[in-house]
Length: 156
Image (tube, rainbow, N blue to C red):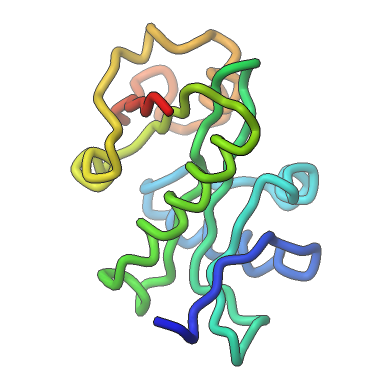
């Protein structure tokens, strides 16, 4: 595990992040993001890399700021061959640390993997309890308005 690092994404990571997100987006596991949006939100992303191969993106996760007290963990993806090793949990912990350092009091996630986020302390909430501002992404989703994701929140 010492060969693994989580760092802030840089511009040269965007195409690899895009490829990773599209892989899972094509399967309906998360919302694909256009390249332009990834460049716009570059500063939101953390990437998981091998120290010896810093250019190989093994995972990615973003923390978006939604409101003065609310953030969202989004676009969590770990490459197929790297799953089951705790890398997703490490990326989520990094986003939680970042949220705390920014002074956020809550973070939420929309997910198909409720058990994973429950282990990190998130609890299920009604989607309607979240601010309307967060639904902008939902309008682009092929499943809108019949969203089958679970909304979960973590109080920091």
